[in-house]
Length: 234
Image 1 (cartoon, helix red, strand yellow):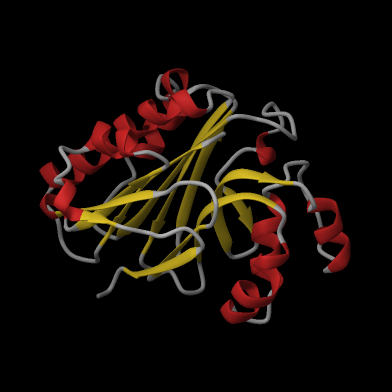
Image 2 (tube, one colour):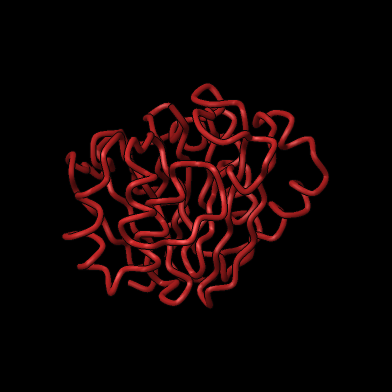
């Protein structure tokens, strides 16, 4: 059991007060997500040009946000940032002390987070002749996307071959205007947040509510076995 927490922003100019609100809310969401996994905490900031920052450490969220490097990185939020992708890890395979096992995971031009477990990860790496750089099973999902011919190939032919529990959020740095998520058989809750003109998502309602006073009429219902693609330009 891991925790997903994130904010997806529409491309637009925001004042410093709003950007500071986004940063505080995202931090509070990760604190709440810590109850789902305190072995490691991390986030990725991705901007509209495909530039990114990843910060992750084998620490629970409370110690993570006491780290000066973490604070320096969370201060990098500016008007060009469209995706704040967070994760708290409960480790089942791959030591958190080996930081490449922690999330967000970058595979080439793909940055993603996963809540769940993959029972056939070894078979997937072998079947698709994919390079493996970490021990964590989640890497298999994002390697499958990175090496797929296109999105349809990944969704229709590759992802259905994954056995286990899956809720994933990812971005493709070559198409940074899009953020993707798949709610298979693990939870993702998402809300539209009017005051920031963006979406907040988490593994639980409580994670989103820790960052925002959510209006439940703004809930975005995602059914199981559904993919969502958000275009931050529109």
